[in-house]
Length: 237
Image (cartoon, rainbow, N blue to C red; front, side):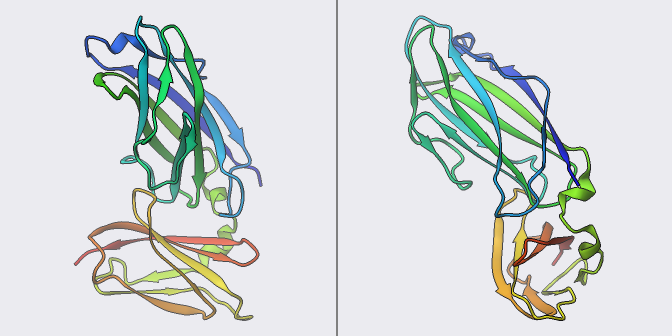
């Protein structure tokens, strides 16, 4: 089954005295990507933003990402200037130098969904490293139009159990595994960050939540063949 992701880019300009120098250009305001990734081994889906220096001086531009409003299991990372960065990088350490009147076209964002949450928002701020009042914010909305299909095997998910919910010290995670195939479990938080990853062959395992902060999480199990099951749960001490 094909799924679709609608991405809406909204440019919000800061009020700094030089903020008008940086502008987003060439970004589509509303477009759809088909074939949402449902397995961690599949490619990420790309979106692009161009930032223009409309001022009279050279701008040493960096970009930072805010993942606060990403749904659990929704992930973003980016390339900008000379380098591409892993998900853990929130601010590009290496700037892109944009001369007066020029446009930087090197920004490439990557989006991936490992859960069946319907929507997310990520914020990318392009700013002058020498004057952070000069900046422009791109607010990117991700919408999965068929949320149930974001998990590759909805029937498999229906047989998965994560209990008790809320969990205090231990979470029992079970999914029938009659052939004892190798599976991978990932526990992700609301930022899309993996806090635990392990492989197992049994029908059931216990995840220690005693040192996990209170909040909402997602348990995702992937088989060696790429079938994915997911359950959300809450930790409450």
